[in-house]
Amino acid sequence: MKKRVLISLILLLLVFSLFSCKKEKVPEIVISSGGKILLYDEKINLIKDFDTNLKGKIILSEIRNNLVLFNYFSDDYTKSGIFVLNIETGEILNLTEGLLGFFPYTPKFYDDENIIFTLKESAGREYLYIYNLKIKNKKPLIINLISEYIHPIYFDDLNNKIYLHLLRYNEVNSKISLYNLLTEEFIENYITFDDKKFYFRETSNENGEILGTSYDSKSGKEKIEILYLNKKEYKLVYEESLGDIADEIFINNSQNILYKLIPHELGKKPYIVLIDRNGKVLKTIEGPTKFEFYVRGVLRNYLYLMAQEEVGGKYYLYLTDLDKISYKKLTRESYFYGGDLTFSYLKGKVIISEIKESNQEKDYILMNLNGENSINLNEKLKIKIDSVLFFEKWTMI
Image (tube, one colour):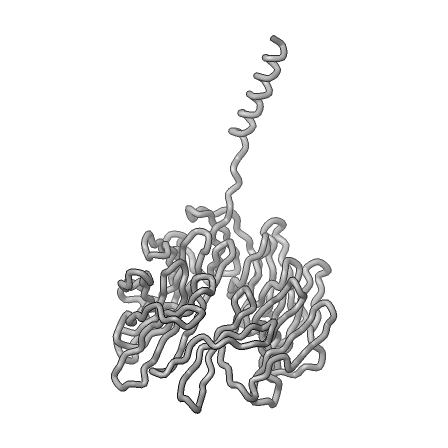
């Protein structure tokens, strides 16, 4: 009898503890506004707010674990810099304290402890730095390298390697360089483009593959190729003879490739081509308007395009399902596209920006990937928004 009573009491305590525990709210959206960083849950309720005491504009860059990495832009450029906010402790670190110059590119986490950023001096020369969060120290990665342009394009943290797109001061052609964080070995001419002209976007996929184009003057064809950084090898994917290739991107976990074709034939409109990695054409897709358009991003079969509705007109954002091919205009009437497109992989949502024709302030609109259930974050929160990110793995284009 006593044993039964004891078991009943234990079960009662367990049930009571489960109901009495408050479920901790998880941030979904991070917003910067007038020197503050604000955390909101999935219902757009404020969870935490941090006053950075920085009098200028904060542009959120990346989130990892409980760290928010951001650029700070002040009217006094000597006070601008790169900072990290710990949302658990509230501590703010100035990663660039003591450095004079500009920080033109988005800083990136190399891993949980290190951040990579570029310093551009007033004379125009660029230097690459690494900041270690554990020892709170920064240092230039490559001593005595004078460059006009230096930008990381792939982090191979398993092998302690950083692949860089580099243009040396007073040189004509850029190159891909390799830096080993462990040994500090620097291979400047890892891949050169003196003989082979290869044009590519500034980032690789997560496997260290870069998608780009080259031109064969003998055949008159433009080629789509994949450059494998670790092997220093090119794979020919497709040869295009009907026009010029633009806006090429990997989609569907890099299994397929999407690009815009600008036909050589006079009067023919640009259109979208979808191919697989072996060069098989899967489908062609007309643009949303008969005028100029650009590919902005693809997630879960949804394609986002920025397009004009008249020659020389403003740009608007359009959406289509790659299976159904029926365009939907996302930008509201009397607004035009503001340039921001931020995806949530986990939630299947997107945030876009738009600008009202009567003023230049951006409105940020949260919606499902299919364009439904849109919420104007500025109007709902009644704040001016400088930048916004999802609190997860994200991409901003």
